[in-house]
Length: 247
Length: 337
Image (cartoon, rainbow over all chains, first blue to last red):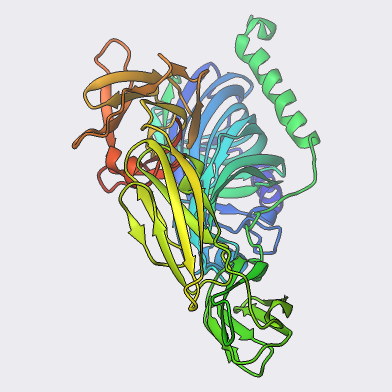
């Protein structure tokens, strides 16, 4: 939240700018669209990244997404946000708890999301429309699916009843709420660069997975289980934005 | 003037907002990773028995034990009650003099130990009657030919054993195993003989059925790589080159997926008239169904039938994966006969 407050302060400060070469124009992007492609680093937080016994051992990953918004009036707009996130798994932490003889983790936590943006823009037009700094903030409710990594463990038969344990992901979808803020550096009202910060608000989600295990006598045990925790994260994005219908 | 109420996107937005708020409210007890860790059970002796292998002193006695949970490095310790011990699994010990003895067995490994006692007061006699006897069980709990039968000798007072299995096969082991190659009713005869040449004969009939003419696929568990999730997949089942049946088409969001007979199968997959000839194969084609194009065979998985015969008709085949070395591809096959 601290970063959001700072962004807000910067926004208010800049909104007071009045000069020949820089002018706040709330309506500059009105009735225009923008389409952006972004990517960046994503950082899990709270229980998602915790390595405590109830933690999920997620580590930093990356994010990629596309977004389209339409600015209706007074810099306010709506849009869609679609993307994916990948988080690595702290294999050492997992190993410390699972204590297997061998471990093979394929992939990490992967997430796909689809959200509906509510966007507020504060365009600062500089240099007679050749260059605009657009400060923006967005709230995005939506749905997302997260999958666990595929994990294969083997144990010595005297250490564990199950000598082979395999975790595989099952489909899991639930809602989320994200907030995002940042700035766009727009050139000639055609294209530009986006720098932003996004936070997925604290929300609980259930992640299903299946488990197959064999004991020393080759008897197969199958189980359906789940994680139920907070998959919060924050991320930093850089992207390209293309403006449509802005004069 | 723009009418926001008429914009479908606005309605969607409200729906999303409600969804997100619901997600915030649906708080349940947190659950992290479940680690499937369970201490393996220590050895558990389920029975200790003995066979007195002569009719007069000194008595040789063979001891038998049945123990479950034999994991790790297993140690056996027998105390025969006359000052002698053994670390063999099923030892034979000669008691030089008659008497009543308490025998103790301890089975241990890295996990724990179990102890059981056996009363050998039967040795407190100057002679023991010769009585032949045995019990048996079919391997895999079925009696289809070829059938493997495991015999347990329950004789007493006999030193030498002659087994006649009724199919031309013979053996002199105490507890033999025998494979009956074809169907029939076999009279198995055990003759137990003492050093005094006194003997006893025990017979039992064993029924061996003809090989199953049909094998039913009871269930099929399919594991595929995650890049095939959400694709329309089905499995065709073949006996040699003959199409037997197929599973229903699925579009799984994750694997493995279990197909259960009959609801998940078309044509009730039965391997008919199985004769177990050389090169006879059971084959599974994992196929992707593609709209407006020919279906595409992703994997061909083959199970040689000789496995079924040589393994005496098991009910389960786990992780059949005779496919190129790719990750996470296998079939668990559940059979009934």
